[in-house]
Length: 166
Image (cartoon, rainbow, N blue to C red; front, side):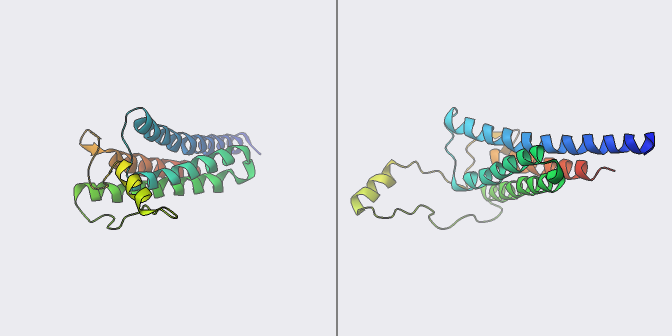
């Protein structure tokens, strides 16, 4: 191997390593931000907000695995990027619902099993109503769902670009 080939391999290795850390840091930060806004800021999530969290959690796990399994680093990083993109797509759908561009969910998603009618009514009355079609908080004219979509989709592009860098 000549010096030039070794330099290219080192650049590729650094690009993949950067992609791995980006695939870990972005969804991890977005999850921490979501949990912080919920538990510290009092912004209760709607159902679609919760949907956006699951792919980020999967991405954190996949990216973490990519860091400890060098032989599987590239495919695990791609899978993490795919999970981040799926959260971005859900966020884009959610932002569209908030803006009234399309209709969101039309059915109730909470199911209580084994509860008496009195217990069910008490539970319903104690649960805050969080609508998916209303913006709870925004910054620079974008809701949290829109920010999630933007950050997730842009970082997905960056991660995939870094893993393909030649």
